Image 1: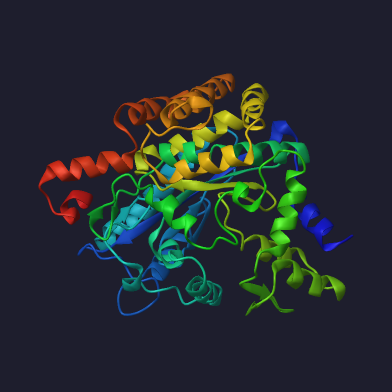
Image 2: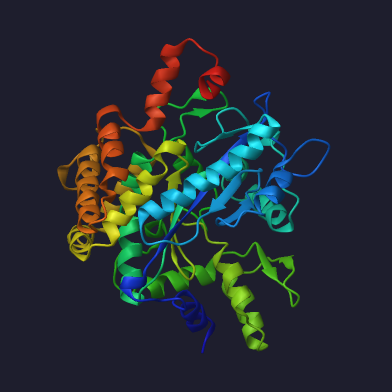
Length: 418
């Protein structure tokens, strides 16, 4: 079995039946102290994100971790029903708030830190992130913004088989501009409104073109042979780090495939090596031994279930998937590329493919999602329907918040933390 075959085997290693498919979510948020400053990530004289993590880890409700700028990330237990995800989400928030209230701190659920430049935010003292930080110095212009100053919602889905994986991955990559628009919540940068720029998406577009962006940007723009093309792409991505014989992180100047082949040739390739390699790919849709949707801004807490419902409605009904595939498979590479450019804009009047405006496409895809949710017969439309109408009538939260701030006559601190 070659390195590529082992990579493929790892990705498909947890395939299950369609009846058993579950999903999980990951939610990141910023933590601010009583003076509206981000709390430090590393242990020191004051209560830090590392101290907070240690307390949260005693919870049995999912898993907690730290992002490189001290953002707290919660990963839910896997579930089939959205109401179970919602229950666990509320339990997580309760656990977090008990500690924050005790310390006089507050959480902020937003896509980009509205106040700080990344130069003002300490980096977590972990070798993996120190190496990543060094990599960002050599790559796109906004990598340090991504590491220290962004928060997202991620949705993870079990894999059924290779055709299922390819269909879901292709559809999810195609709808990226719609997802980015609907769930944009990054209205400010360094205390100023950012206009029609879909900021968090823009940051990721300018982080590291070798490992980020959409799959279409890496030449993966058709359904046929999608997994094979993804494997070829993954193997040539430049490596940031690798694992030594004792599973310690070491720097690497090779391609991911070269690092894996080096261990493979010695008969030492382990699942952990493959996992570490796949974690160094940051595309909007990422494959590990599940499918990850990564292009959603962290939303105000009351709206976090909306993107979970939106994506779930699109992928669980085969008729809905077929309708989307019939459209997207007929688009050329040029169609996909120009379509993807809309993902950095909050202007719904821009023209998309087939002589439809961006907003018309958003309306079409959103309505398909609601049909898919209805077909699950679990009453899950409620998680997306009101949010969908709210965004269609008033625009993305990023725009709404900017407009409200302009009319408020308040400082940004007071406006954000009122």
